[in-house]
Image (cartoon, rainbow, N blue to C red):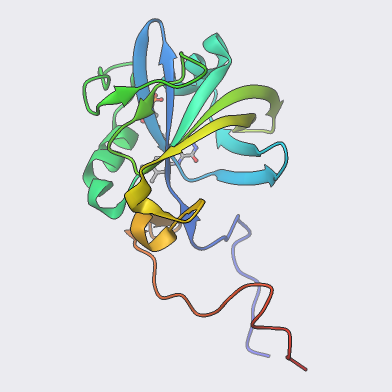
Length: 186
Ligand SMILES: Cc1cc2nc3c(=O)[nH]c(=O)nc-3n(C[C@H](O)[C@H](O)[C@H](O)COP(=O)(O)O)c2cc1C
């Protein structure tokens, strides 16, 4: 076996990039996060691994709500910009068209094809980052990006991320139907 032990890290490739939205001190703010994942299907629960120092994290703690917005590949520059400047120093509130849903205080981005508004249900301090665990209370998408009842991944054209070389990617080809293609495998 030619494998050797490599630097120990969270080697998960690829990762989705989301724009996390919150309001802090009355100002709307967004930041990209790659540390985002699903924890539970019903109720729908997600977790974000964030530094509690971010302007966005402060807003999540202030209001107990946040949003998750999926940028498409076309939004790569705006997404990256939100990650290179902080709301502590730069006002990012005018970058996107903002709308609100049921929670009324979780700002969502109209330009993103898929949006979820979340209630912060738990916080776990882990080390450098804190796990912000949120229940999704409502999701939003236009018909043109849907396939029946569910969003269509190809139409969403999500921006994805590779940590290590710090590069953005787009998705590749569909290679098979899940819970199906493996049924005959021996
Ligand atoms: C591609 C990318 C992914 C990022 N992922 C995370 C993440 O998962 N967790 C985190 O705490 N910061 C992450 N950041 C850093 C924040 O987005 C960045 O520090 C941002 O400026 C914070 O903005 P704010 O202070 O306005 O909230 C990421 C940045 C980039 C560019």
